[in-house]
Image (cartoon, rainbow, N blue to C red; front, side, top):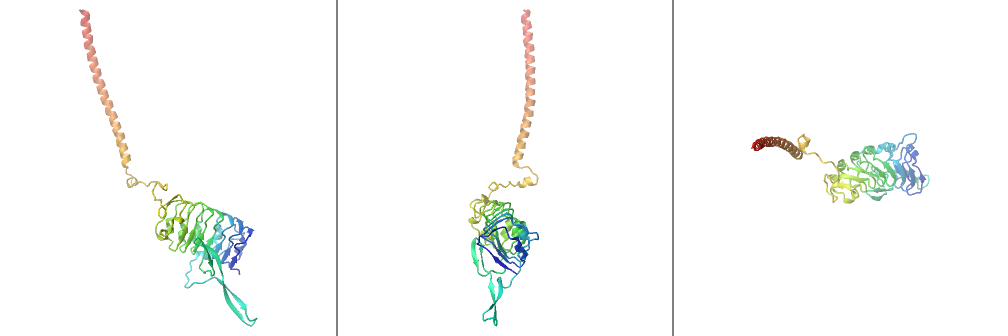
Length: 318
């Protein structure tokens, strides 16, 4: 029946306790700031974290790829449930104040510290709708999984300070409730998906210290983010960075002109063809004129030679 497990800030040296998935009522798992290490591998039976709301594995030494099997089992995070009033995670216990005669029921609220929007915040009461994943400050590698986009009720996602590569998947735009997204200090490449500008609740966004390139999306919440959100990405351009976007600036191919798109020749190609045609015609005219001149000089030479021969013969006779 365990719902809340907080073992953070200890010195536990172990691999990931995959047997926790047998506790199907777990809503909160906090293993942050320990010495957990190695890849997160599923047990012989599949992971079953179907009721999980919060998983915080930050500040450990986990390695390998992001745990896809584990993330696929987060069924509670896949459903966006509308709530009429704010409810908090709690458990009900019975205290006997006056011996066994008087029983008093009281609610104990779950409390925790979570890193949200770049700041560690203390939650004395955890809202029931709070859904968050923090895998930061580990050694996870590989790509960010597309399937994370299925966790539509996520409010917080922190994958910072790992060794993640590849591009940012556009599927993250499906996280319509997302308020905080931190992908900083990885080795991500490619462009920032423009679809992320559709996240209307996103108030914290950080992709600094990566290898991203191309224009920063405009519109929506992206108009409110500061330069710190995009720092140390040499290929990025556009507001709020001082680097302006040009086709040469972020190494994208120069788009074809409208004439080239419809199959017409560019002016440069036409000029070059005219030059070649002109040179060819000039060459032919030169050859013809040269032959004519040579023929005329040949006739003149023959005529002059005959005249000289006649004069020579006359002189010999005299």
